[in-house]
Image (cartoon, rainbow, N blue to C red):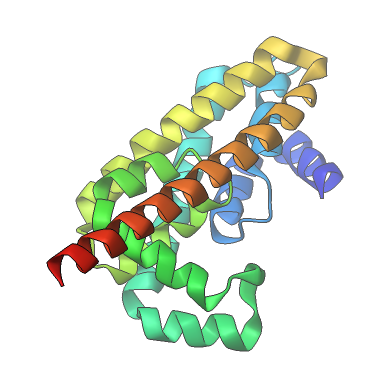
Length: 202
């Protein structure tokens, strides 16, 4: 997949970046890390500029997020669980959907913003926002800001590293694992705290 991404970006330039990032938001297994860091590297070898790459990547991010938001607004939590059970989409389990929805309901705007800077989750968070009927304007604003930060960091890193752009992918894998671990631990602590409070109230 990485070779295909590099080929598309090399052939179509800015438009290729826009389309790849849009697809990455709809289909998370396409790695935004590769697209963005290689896009940064391309600014050192082509006429493409850092600002242009960041701008097109952000437009693609928002466009893809709005599409998933729309899908979420049409569906509901129960339908998403049924779809996950039937088609095993992206290996998402019904309990994952329930946890994500509970997390979204509790933190809402903060979740949409911060999750835009977490690989894979950055795309999927748009669905709970749609299901939860989050107002579209705040969703777009938070998605734009969060995506802009993520895109800027990776594109600039690719531009600075140049031909060594791939070296950052290892660190991003570590970052992803750390974030997922932190979320899991945080979720566990919150669950235990909630159980403790319910027992006290009981």
